[in-house]
Length: 249
Image 1: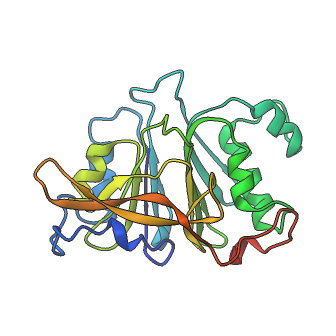
Image 2 (image 1 turned 90 degrees about the horizontal axis):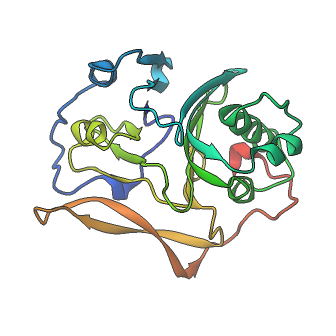
């Protein structure tokens, strides 16, 4: 799967930008070229143009039955999901969904609940997802994204920033390397990313995340990984049961 978002939708963390890049052009420049590069050689690849906000793409090539890729769109909310949720039956009941609802439908409904002033904070909602997963959701109504990866990193998931400051995400590390050069890193385990608040840990929502420089095999500093700073607490965190507006979360 692949997603690329304009900086007006999602500003990439500063730590992703590698000092070694020096503002050089990436190997694949521009969203159309990136989508073409993704589709080349992939039978049945599907691309979704999000206008000035960016694009999504996915295919069933090399899809594992244990880590399937699934796409869904509901009410102008688009979701790419890779993996499986172990407690999807319980979550369907919690969100009032039918038995036929799949993982991306569930993620869309969970996001809708958050967006529409639901009773639970985002870290709790993501933390309630049990299984191996990575997902990318784009809400075209609010021009917002909601991205997450489970705590043990069971699904390969990478992100980076290209020469035009697009945020690029994919389960294919070679796609991200080709597009972002050295300005990329694995997406942090146990974390989620939103347009409003950036990167946060759902495992340790009270703590700040700090960038840790990542050094490649040539000894050059690449895009940073992010670790929980156990000594630094956030100034405030939405309370369980609060009616915090998702758009300002």
